[in-house]
Length: 566
Image 1: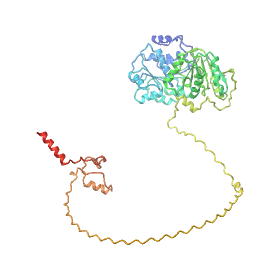
Image 2: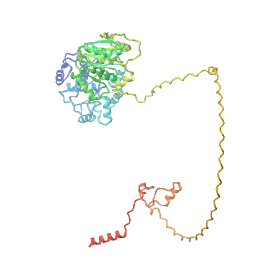
Image 3: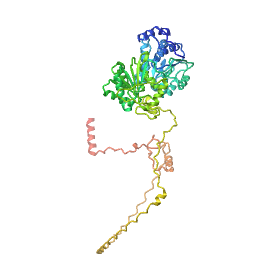
Image 4: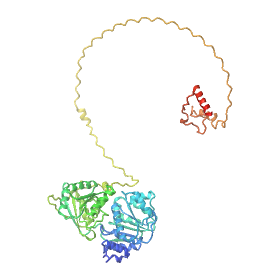
């Protein structure tokens, strides 16, 4: 569907008086093209496949009609009535803020389920029942596996920034979540791009959807002035500082490709006395919220960040965006500069490239359909792009590192993958010298004859030891008297054999079986009953007996007892 002229006002879209009052209080009077086309279709109950560039009001295009739909009804404990999936914590928090802003005249309960925050607090909110559940895929699946949430009562499903979900590797999690939902539901699918993979997912999740395209896919807003400076790698920081000083920067995003470079650039700007904060995926959630709070309130003028802030952060009147590193994917460039020039306002975007970034700049210009204006920075020599270079400077990152950055610092691999890591090549063995050269070598000189050793003097003969005197012979021992023979002992009377019952089930028959099987001496006792075939070791230990009392002690004890009886 092509872009159409926006409706005159929100009142023509079929919203209630309470919603119109909330929208007017937020300062909006005219809907954007995506809002004007999507809101009436969502109110009709149809599935929607929406595509619009960043900063055009996609969030309000589904939050406003959802509030209208959920106004009638009641939530149940642990069974949300609607579900919104977002790829990042910042985007999920942005959607939650929209519900607070537009739903202040409705008694709707919402829950924000994201990582980095207390799970017990989130479970307590779910137990009270929520109408709107806003979550990231990982934390939602964790809640479900712990039995803290049921998804069988979801009537409306929203998948926001689906292309970002695809880039971050969340699609398998999204597919599993969708399989847990009721088959009969309304699904709203929004994305900034509509590539073949996104359309395949839309066909799997949606049923006879209404496709709404409010702008050309992956296009930048016409209100953004774009510039490109090509310098050496070592001059990038100086170029950035010069641009910040000469431009009238009210507030600005500064994007880096790697989280490590975010921290390095943050400390560099801090050292040069700029009011700056940083934001990337390895930071704890409280630190991320604190940094965003300072940037939104104006306490910090600059925000150095990774692509985690490229979407979902809606801050009005952002004047500048600086790409300290050229993004590898051209779509990321559109989302980065989309932080400025929002809602019809003007903005300026500057990209600092090195000659090795030539092929990435070409891909971006091909996506935009035009060339980015080149600028020269005073005091820094301008260079030309190397379009044939395959190298990547310090600001770049590999595809593996990029996936780790997109997934919040952890790499995600598909289960059952049969790919094996490539082995490092072995070092070549040194070539052996040809046999002919070895034979041609001159023979080694014979060893010099050893000098004749002086003959050793003969050892003096030892003197003969004197013969020992013969010992006197010992007298023979007297013969022992023969011992008298012992009298034969009378034979003992044979004891009558006891039966198995008399021996408590442990008779001679069992002892005979032990001896037949060669077990030998077994740790068993005939007088131990109830312990099976073996007696525990602690039962066989010696127990010290009491010391026997003497006659004097017994007599004294008897006299004491006699006195007591009297």
